[in-house]
Image (cartoon, rainbow, N blue to C red; front, side, top):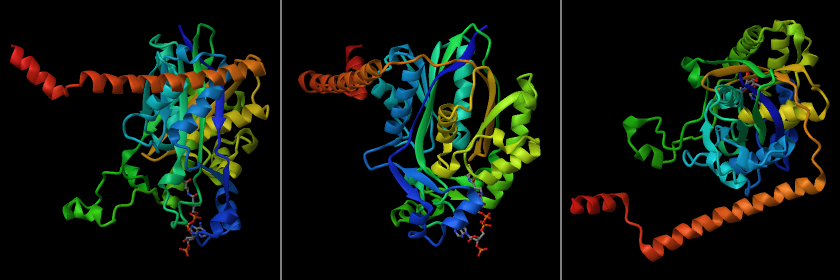
Length: 386
Ligand code: COA
């Protein structure tokens, strides 16, 4: 029997801070309104040079340092995101290239704010089945790029960032003990983000899009989402803890999706668990969607909130509708990685970038020197030969 243990963790938050007071200069709102309704004071915003893939890479690189693992040992990379730059190539493939993880499969996972827990569960099952040995699961978002900055109902909630964990197969019992994944597509319109090619009024033809009517920004019914979240958080935690053969008293820490302090407080009340057992950093990060749980996990670890052999619960909820929970035994103490070794690790990513550039140049040179028939031309040539 194989067990999937978390052996590395890392997060990345962009430098730029957007406070509630900054927002009050952009839309009709106030620090007091936002803080009392959500618990958020500020959020991070990616710079123009940063993308979901670069944030994801930074978090993954840090997680691999903690895991003391070379990128070539990674078999699988999953990036949970709702804000990829491209539908394809996947953000995960770009991260694979940036890391130089030459032996890894890579794909993106779309389950909105539940995406990280979905990804963790998929990766853990791949390890438990023996299909892969090690995996990197990342939650990464540039939500600031898909917000309507004139809609005070949504733009005050979200922020940018990335978090990652490294999972490793082991015969030692522990790691990911149980997961629950759920969806209710009937509530899809409560929280949505249309794809770039989506025409909400197809009967009016493509002209409708050209006239600037299309809005590729987050739309939300806040009250309905609030009601949904308070119901599913407590239920999914209870169900998953039971599946893991534990009781709520045996759970040391719950790391929930960081959407709103009031949602977390209501879930704590429903579970009859002291709210202190829920880790929260929504005040400084806002809602970073799929990135929020791994970022919160990293903060919880650095604040000493997790000790070896603690049972920890991750719980996510969001668009889809989707919700998910995982229970883990936190049983791996990271090795001490010396500063020179850390720096040496960073250097290999420069090597990875150089190798990637060389591969691109090589393809270009082959194209110009030898010519590269298109697949259609190749088929025509093959037909002629027959
Ligand atoms: N600043 C000031 N006033 C605002 C505002 C803002 N940023 N946003 C909305 N309002 C106003 C509304 O226009 C409304 O005014 P009205 O009564 O004159 O019509 C009033 O505040 C109440 O609006 P309402 O939407 O009922 O507020 P609320 O108490 O439900 O709080 C949310 C709004 C978004 C904070 C709350 O519904 C929420 O947190 N929902 C969950 C959202 C979430 O977490 N989404 C992500 C899940 S992954």
